[in-house]
Image 1: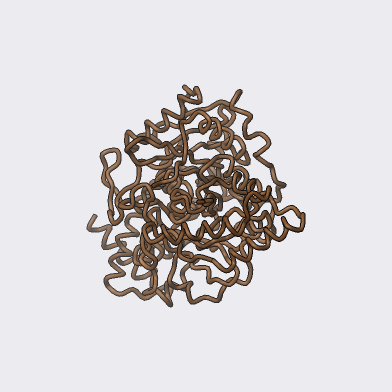
Image 2 (image 1 turned 45 degrees about the vertical axis):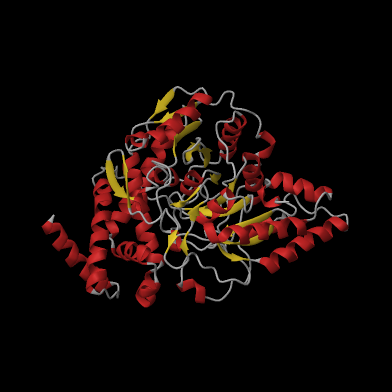
Length: 462
Length: 62
């Protein structure tokens, strides 16, 4: 039986009740991964021994009458920028492969392990998380499980593809400018980018400290919410993680949307969008009964400022490696990081000051609305190897531009759930459900309403 | 555009030297081209008239 294609909640229920064993579930998941990975190339490492040991520990707890945790026996995998004890933390690079193995697990991996989940492997990504396509020169491109000629999106492309392909029900990724939301959209699954500072980044290889987030992917809203709840909590190991106690979303997940004011973001977020992206937002808005439109002021400038902060902080982070091991970088990321390392400081400071201004303007909008809807990507997935796309009648590079609608949101750390709209015979595309800081539970409630209405879903690709 | 390109080429040469980065001619050309794309973004940001009291958040508190 293919337990890996089950959702996390059902799998944990089966294991906890003794209907099946964690060992059986995990063996089935590894078989599924080994069968499918040649085609999709989402896993860069399968952690078989560790997975079997973790599964055995879960089964022993059950046999001893102990609580095995809410995710007992649920297989999961993480973007290869998360520390996994005993493995070098690749972050998509060749350079890091020769670094010493991680001494401990990343904080979020520790939390999932404590909840009974079982780590089955690590996942492909753009080198050092700088890209939206997961076409990695060292480890190959990750294919979209819905059409293997197309990209899965990035930079957490392996995380999205592994879930979309039914190899595991949950994965973890990171999102600096859209790296959870873009692959969720292009691979047709649910993804959560929480509020900046909500989840601990300790043990996750950094990219842009001012903008880095981490979060989960799943095929159902309930799985996404449950995992998110288990990942919450303050962590002094991450200087950006706020001292904020967990605010569980599961208790109100089915509370509906009565009283919530929902608006569609217009102007910048539709001007260059293909009709399929506009239609997806419209369909979601109709289901939610929204007729209100708002404008996020200066969104194009916000996107530009995020671009500059990313280039500058990313370039600075990698300056030593660029000097000493420049030839070992993926050519696609090297020149962007080099340029970022050199850019004038006035650009960076103005971008950071603009962030403050933009934050104040957008916060004022939340006086009048609770939820903002906008496209996750300007179009659905593009072919692997293709450099440019035409959106809104303009030709532009895919790698830096597929996140044009995600960047103005993560720029000020707002929480977002991406919901996947599937269309018969066409590739999926996602819609961003955005709320005010710390209101992830609103995003999840809205996503649950849409899922229940059958408007959004994440069927396994075959 | 030609003038911009020359200015950026000079800037990259000097900024790379200041940062101890050595660039062969091909890398140099690619970095100039990339930085010109970033400059388009910077023009948008630098053209915005920010009030004097808007400062970088000392702690990015939402």
